[in-house]
Amino acid sequence: MDALTEKPWLQDPMYGGMSAEAAEASWRAAEARREVDADWERQFGPPHEAYPESAEGEPITDMPPPNASQPAYAAITPASWKGTEPEQQRWLASARVPSGDLTIMSGNGGSGKTEIITQLLVNVAAGLRDWLGCTVEPGPALFLSCEEPEHNIRDRVERICKHRCIDPYRLPDLHLLFPDLESTWLVHAGKDGRLSRAPLLDWLEAWIVGHKPRLVVIDNVAAVFDGEAIARRQVRAFLAMLRKIAREHDTAIVLLDHPSVRGMADGSGTANSVDWRNSVRSMLHLSDPEKDDPDARTLTVTKSNYGRTGDRTTLRWGGLTFTTAMAGESSPYRAAADREVDELFLRLLDRFAAQGRTVRPNTGRGSAPSEMADEPDAGGVKTEAFRAAMIRLLKAGTIKIVESGPPSKRSKHLERATS
Image 1 (tube, rainbow, N blue to C red):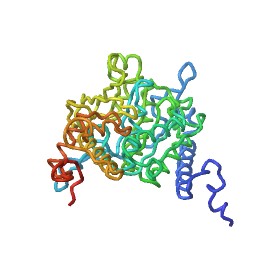
Image 2 (cartoon, helix red, strand yellow; image 1 turned 180 degrees about the vertical axis):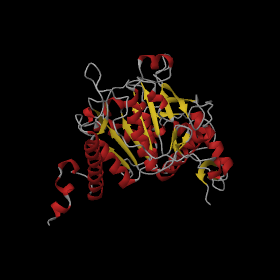
Image 3 (cartoon, rainbow, N blue to C red; image 1 turned 60 degrees about the vertical axis):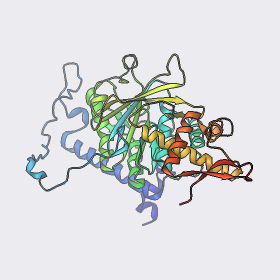
Image 4 (cartoon, rainbow, N blue to C red; image 1 turned 45 degrees about the vertical axis):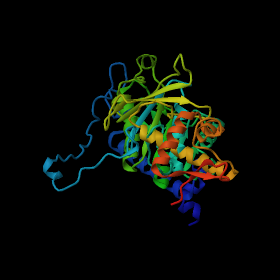
């Protein structure tokens, strides 16, 4: 028996470009589902015959199929918990994106939701451990972009990396997929209302099995859900498929969506059937630009089953990307935002030292905060924010003030403190 007969996935063009391990996993998953569908038809006939028909000839799908086998259930009592530790909720992005579950992030077209979700992908893959004022877990990340073309995402990745002073071409944990626009469906809805998995969903699950990502972002609902967005059962079934994958493989999945006109008007960010909201554990909404300040946005936690709902974080466009680092801003995640500026301060200080530039701790031109705010990589961080970072780093002993020059003309500059 030759290798192609033993390994049929090697000759299937659908798995081209995938690793041998991922191709085999995807092929076997598809085979298992075909066996389940075949078993269903052997028991109940084709899907349209498994249900009685209405007077109009349409299948009545809210009735159970004839002779359907009953699933086995086993109730428990609280006594089964005795002597065990309760499972603690983990977060991919603290208080915003839960691990092992599904989150929907909504925002009007052009609001910047793709920008900030790309920031999250980069920060997770680069191990930066923060995102717009909250802490994140590091690890592999995948962006399934079914709407934005590759060159648009590349531009975002390169700008975000420039803002964080990292090399965009050395991110082995950041993975991107841009499927053909005619092949973006994850599920299809049949005439009987039942959903069937599309090849892209099989590929996605196999990829998750092989790479064990911490984060998967899917852009967006309209491009991947080939069903009725207001059909409650289809919506719940689709989201249940994604939640099952997230739970079984301990990955956070974020599904991007556009709000309805009503969702934009009331700020909830919701769209279509209420089951889109009810079937996920967390929802985020990014506002449109403010009328009086087009560079400002608000990121709101509109639903959280595991944390506080209603938290708002003010964002500002800084030329390269969005940042929360603004003087005087108050936020429950201020510590994480401060840490982001502190890290940027240290990176710029290291660069100045490598260039032979000295910066002073006082005010005015030549001071560290002023010089850093003028840097192209400052990303909109202002002098006041850098000054606050300098004070924190001096208090922590991370940097120090050094005197140099002849006795008659001593000067002070900043350096990294040696351990």
